[in-house]
Image (cartoon, rainbow, N blue to C red; front, side, top):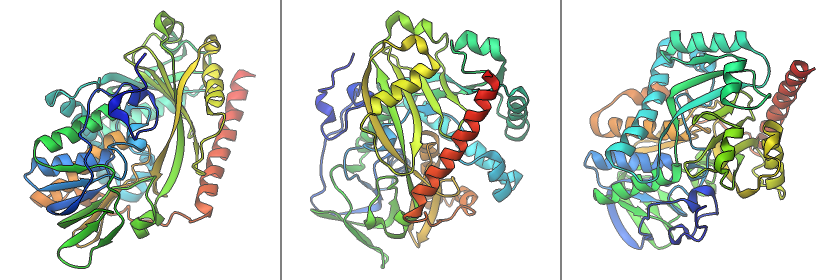
Length: 436
């Protein structure tokens, strides 16, 4: 396996991704006063993508990150890179209309293409885009899956391959799954290597990236904006706020419009030849439940498994045991396999489940609330915002129906947990019916 004492990973939590990090960003904190065209606050996939797009267009960019690049959910997620949003296609159509819903879908697809193209053209190390994401149902639902397949093709031009039970179980050796839809235009990647590699290219092009440089306060009242850290100040024309699940009160009303949702991930030891006991596909797998399981094989032979959601943003003390139970529920044949490392990440959601791309006031934007779809929407929104500010692009208007919404304050996390619990009960009942 990889070395958990990687010298590049000081300041990160221990995950599979930090143990297999292949690139190193020189760690610099902001000291003193500097000027820029745009100051980006938050170094996850949204902030790094925006920094790269702006730098590519010749703007002088400063990126501030409180911890390390992609320290939060952007560098801890399941690595699934696919089109779409957290919000359902039907809810997007209801709010945006069919024409704009298709444009939004095409943009989410463009985000996938951006990541793959950047990885290849910039020769980003260790990202390893691997083709295929397979969405599965844990109860017989041929009609529902076929309807999803038709809608995806006819309304969004997305060609999904339907897999009936036996074809699916030839690929995924579990009796928990009944039907599947395979998206060959989706991928799974190493998100931390992608984000750090892209940040390195920002620096190579002349952008400035500062880690351990938390924003403490802002003065956004004048034409020249001022963003302060403990030891320095950035003066700029534009400010872009990309803080998400880990944002603090310094983000003001933006923080009150984000609902942090915890998700849990583990990786096993190297399975070696035993991978063929469970899978005959290199695709990533995810089921259709709200609080779903998603898993994939890493290039180095570990089973990486994510699952569960909590609005209470806490990591259970017995996380490894909980996640091992989820794995063996699907693959009893792995009951003797050890969990090597476990971790938690906080995703940022809006109540409407769509990303925020909002101009809060003149020349102050937010780009956040990626809702578990950050690997495609972060790059897509970064491009759209750069187009808007540098080229008078208009695609940002697609997000006008999705403005800031109050997160429910103290009640918000409990409501989110209640929604997950009800969904889990419904799905559990359907699963029992199918096995009974």
